[in-house]
Image 1: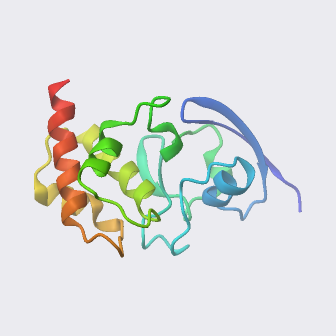
Image 2: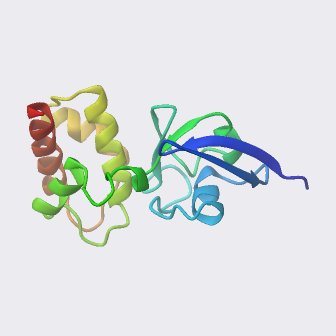
Image 3: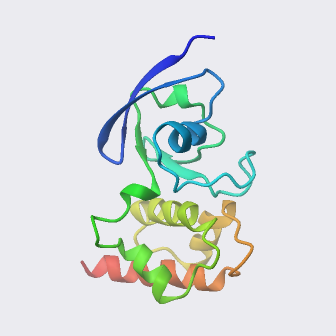
Length: 158
């Protein structure tokens, strides 16, 4: 089987890779590009642990083929912080103890960032609705929701 050559931008940097036609974007990110922040939780798009943005759209990378990334702009959890400085959402997750095992955290952070880029002042209901595709088995959701709402308030001040 021949490989597909893909040129893309990931977290603002040019990236190239070869992949099989059936390889998912999640597999490419983790296995070819060593970007292991997105996690495989279900491999069926039900848990959100593998969430990334593809051309500004929140997607489950387990449901996207690596070949579909050709010419696309991808954002992963690895691009969220600015060097050693955490993104406001990351800091608020720490402040609110909104994480435990960490499997779901990268996907939830990417989803929350996507929400706040579209709606900088979401209600609690809107945050809960937006994050409904991201499952957490450890924390419950109140700390996560509070962290997102707190981050949104801080981001509006800037």
